[in-house]
Image 1: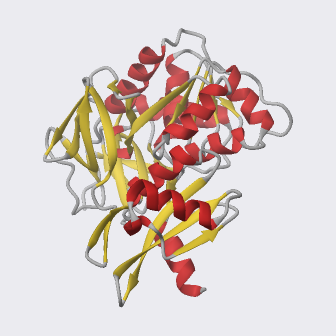
Image 2: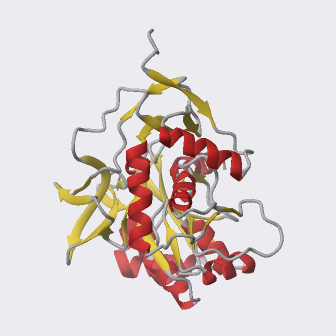
Amino acid sequence: MDNSSQRNILRVSPEWETPKLAGEITSALAGDGPTLGFGQITSSYAPSDIAVVIGTSGTTGNPKEVALSARAITSSAKASNEFLGAKYGDTWSLLLPLTHIAAVNVFVRALELGSAPLDLRNIEGNYPDANFTAVVPTQLFRALNGESKLLKHLQNADKVLIGGASLSQGLRRQAEAAGIKVVSTYGMTETCGGCVYDGEAISDVEFEVKNGRVRLKGNVLATTYLNAPWSLGTEWFETSDLGEIVDSKLVVLGRADDVIVSGGENISLSAIESSLAVAFPQLQTAAFSNNDPQWGQSLHLAVVGEISDEKILLHLEKDLGSVAKPKSIHHLSSLPLRGIGKIDREALAKEINRE
């Protein structure tokens, strides 16, 4: 195979120090260094215009190697800084693992501002202040429920991007009441991470809802998957999410594949989680299903936080009807995650099968 028109992929180690990674990202974006591979990457080469490859399983569990051009990554970083009102010399803090596009974005946004990100992934002691940062809802929840040093860091930031998974309105209200200036982001690896902020598209990005599905386009879109056969499409990227447009803003309703059929009744897992988030913002919850010989699929619930099962059952029946009452409720110390913020429902189902 002729690889003369391609670039070698250099796999990034999570142990790299900030200066080394900043230098390698700069070279990759300029085109005079190797393509950088983050996460689980099996490919050794990428097309010459690809600066970064991200290994991701999304929510499906099917590993994909998402190839992003320098144009896509820098367009995303510039648009993000512009939306947030960031000025040259402002700082970003890194609180996310070096296996995902969200961490890459923090580096590139900082470089666009002439600064270096403050690497706080393994910090001990007090957190230094930064103008901007990005976390997932799980980190926000922990900050509001005991991690006081992280909480102070988020409170002192000009803006805090929350992405990687859906941010419940209850958790958002709790964060804003604590003085955190929250910006909820929507996007995926294929769009260089968040590209819709608080329902508004960042610069050069467009969204639409077609046949109920959210579709995105703009310079931030990935070029291809290195490990075909998946296709990105030509102009618009169709997501797996359901949405609607309200007052010109995008409202994401949940994934198209999160509806289960139990006893002939359709049940939305996202609707159950959203209902509980509004009623009990102090909890983390995850609705999931299991194959059931009687019901087809049976509904189950995992909960992090102190609450009685009876209180949950009474609320769900009142808010969504008896069909929304889970067959079992499991109290956990933490929820299993896929990637940096998405609940791993498959892992939850496997766990109850072992019980």
